[in-house]
Image (cartoon, rainbow, N blue to C red; front, top):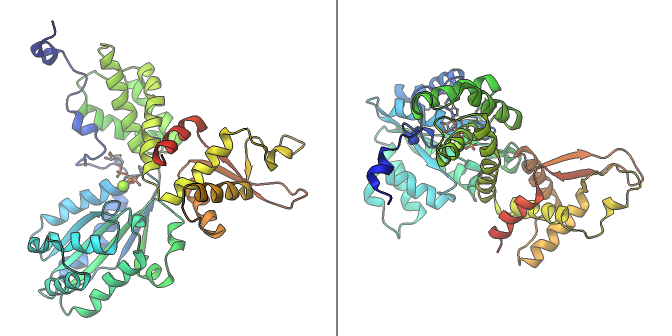
Amino acid sequence: MASFDEILSKPSLFKNINILSPHYVPNILPFRDGQISEIMNLISPALKNQKPRNIFIYGKTGSGKTCTLKHIMHKFNVLNSKASMCYINCRIYNSRYRLMQKLLKQYDPSTDKSGFGLPFFYEKLIEFMNKGNHIIVVLDEIDMIKDLDELIYTLTRINDEVSLGSLTIIGISNRLSFKNELDPRSKSSLYENEIMFPPYSSLQLKHILEQRVSEGFSENAVESSAINLAAAITAQESGDARYALKLLSKAGELAEQSNKTFISDEDVELARKKVEIDLMQEALSGLPEHHQLVLYAIVRLSSSNAPRYSRLAEDNSFDGFFLSGEVYEQYSSLCTQLGKKSKTSRSFREYINDLEMLGFIVSKVSSKGMRGQATLIKLGHESQDLLKILEKIFS
Ligand SMILES: Nc1ncnc2c1ncn2[C@@H]1O[C@H](COP(=O)(O)OP(=O)(O)OP(=O)(O)O)[C@@H](O)[C@H]1O
Ligand SMILES: [Mg+2]
């Protein structure tokens, strides 16, 4: 009969599983020294009673934006000063109202009641800053805010109305095209400084993994070739450190399930497929609705046998690609079917760019043919995996 004593005394491959969690902020962040010192320099005026300029941070998923900013914030907020940094995840606080409420709550917990209006939050923030306080607000995943232009306008206007303190915005996003969606005034406010986080190389990932392995796994629990393989697979796919970490912890789980005493290449290979589906699900559910719908349209085209223009090509030049026009058609009819209003073809092109940048699709421009040049679009993943996830989202 199983006993808890027996379960607990079984040696584990993991020493501290929390260290492998994507939310853990390591004390040392290799390869981000440049970005860390640049950001520290840019925000340091707040410690000298001056207003820092706003910063916009851009980089692909898993390039360390969130953990870098949290790392800086921990260092900044222990200084005894009237300046403070405040982190807000805009995926959760995704409107001007919710965000202002959250921001104020950090400084005045008595305002954490419902029923207050936006002007109240605005006045209270001004009151707080007029006491000489400098706030640096980190808006992570800033592109998730629905009324972002209004928010930026409100936050920047606060500075015109205070005589002592200041409010500085650090916006973070992994969507490149997001910049073009802002109105010019918000754009110039937000982009006073721009900092780029490049994806990690295979060697860099190896180093990052080694550091986490020594803290998170038991001694000798991971073969060094397994670390190399995880780094190589990740670098080839995306350079996303989150993926590399997931790959290793999933490999650890699988190895443990089959009572192995260490993690080898084989476990990393097995983990790969499972991690891909997990991550795809996370990434998909985090996309704005119309991005999901456009992707759904492409997935439906890819998994159906319905006749389509691109099939009419006599040569094989389409090779799984669809004409952008037929994708748009499919997207519009999908919207109708689901009782949603489809967006313009201009927005559609933005969504296509974003989806490509996030690795969901591949696009190219066709060679000159009878129809002139057209954009061609193809899925970057197995349509069956995507279909299952999207069907669930829209069911
Ligand atoms: N330089 C680094 N050293 C150690 N760990 C890192 C480093 N960069 C990223 N990581 C780890 O990789 C994971 C992903 O990093 P993070 O969440 O900061 O990415 P991100 O750029 O914010 O991605 P997204 O755009 O998807 O939000 C985290 O677990 C983080 O601890
Ligand atoms: Mg992040």
